[in-house]
Length: 335
Ligand code: V47
Image (cartoon, rainbow, N blue to C red; front, side, top):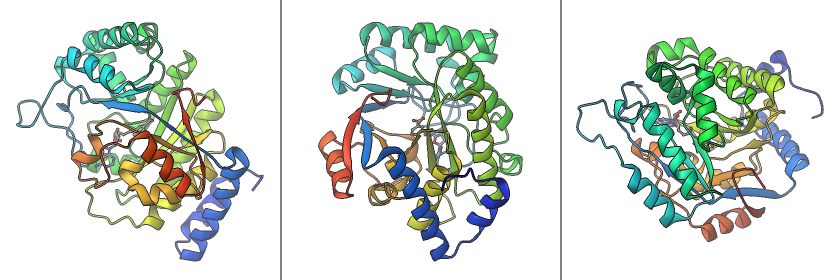
């Protein structure tokens, strides 16, 4: 597959949900993966840190967040976050939390500064575009200043969360108070302009149409043509939803991502949401990275994911080898 897939060809290719058509798409995606990465499959020894699950938004699909004042809300203190990092000795941290008044911009900025001071070599991937937007409004300083201050404090990269699906139809129904697609893209573009790389996600399984999924991918591809700042794409399979996603449904989204996003280097099979077996098979449907060991993942598990909450490095290596690939432990910069 040497030519870039245009909109009409993509609709024709992905509309056909017959098993044979899906297997064909999987083979095409595997060829692209093989040409780009060979048998190499990467993972990172990382730690997810969720400073607080208290969130002023009330998104229908999210089992992680708790409204302020409701039971079950928590907020970690900085000391325990630093201790957790020291204990786990990760090479990357992934920090994401709810929109909590107690965790405003200044406190979040201090957290990054203190993590950087204590762990000079750690790769710090922190705060989704949704949180950056919240900091922007809450601190009353400009978007660019928010990003610059975070970068100067030691932030390396923005994670891809909070994109959900770029569809106003679905946003109106399920997450009307969250930032829209234009704003999510604006924030990532601003980060890229400041040389802050980022990731992108797609949340699927929300009864979206194939066109809505494709629109999401085409908009990401367009921004990437402009900035080149996206490093990895992570499709997120809805956890705890009414719609049942089969392994083939999940694999098809991995393949679609690999084929449409020809300008984003890495496609992650995010095992907490796919399950370990599907994540292993996804390596031959276009994915080349398994994200990480994760420590205690909370977002997927709060919504009922039945995968383990963490993986040891040797378990990760074995999973990749058993799938027929070469495991390589990477750092946040993919080296
Ligand atoms: O932002 C929330 C999504 C995201 C559910 O950038 C749900 O490297 C499925 O963004 N079912 C957090 N998804 C996870 C995320 C991520 C994961 C791994 C790597 C990276 C990266 C980013 O999970 C949230 C939201 O979009 N989410 N609830 C749910 N029930």
